[in-house]
Image (cartoon, rainbow, N blue to C red; front, side, top):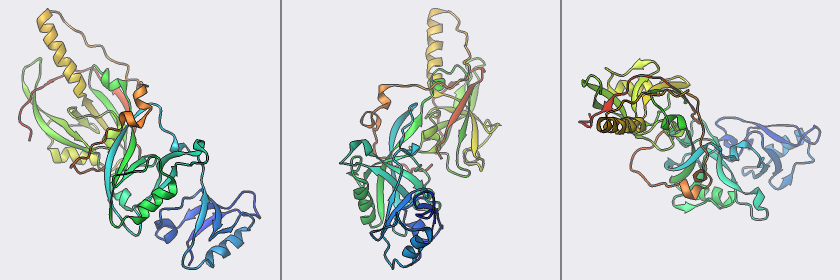
Length: 360
């Protein structure tokens, strides 16, 4: 059997044998066990460290129907690093097995002889077209916490791979992922303009609702498009700037005063690598309502102060341990959703008060 793996180098060249390419659709690619850039150590227990490039290819071609490969990977790869300016959340993702795998590659795991070499069980690659890719919410860098209820956070890589191998059809993965932190959202004094990176055509990860609101100045009722729900681990969730209750004023420069929910959802889905939103954060609406009540009691005026639009990242103890922030609870909601980032800029305009009425 020929695995359709390409290598560069060998004993006759400058550096050790290294995987350079996995041909899409063939067994080496579909097994979800190998990655370009990793070093080949042995083929069917035969060390290849002293073999030339051609000798390695010969060993692979004559390996038979079952090929056992031993590889080395870099523990200092940035994929194992958790961002400092982020909080960590957990989400459950259900995948159906296909061609023996779920379409993602994992590395890391516990290493008993030397704890300094232990890493979280981390997703390091997602195969295009595979189950994980089609589901849309797993990302490179996510950590696997449980598989079908079994805690694997302190398991070895081999044991986790064996658990995955033994699953017949469907698996429930609880992953830990990173969410950006923005003080700009909490401290906003006007609508925010944010730009979120996404995969073209991917689900944005929010459900919307049309609600009535009252302009506090003119006392005229208007309709508004609000975020009703944010899907865990989706593009919207990971960017850290969008929350339930936020009002969306514009999508890619298009106002939503007269759009339907279906049209708004299509604008969010889009086929560009970014989506630009203008929103009024729900936290700001709550503060505005409290401020108006206070002004009515004390009979004085409050002037808005515009922020400088700079993204300020927060740091805190709550971000240092998964056990303190990974408060996953299973949900019956469907879960869909590139690591999104958001840039925010404040714009000073009059805020409008939301009125609790019928949601369509």
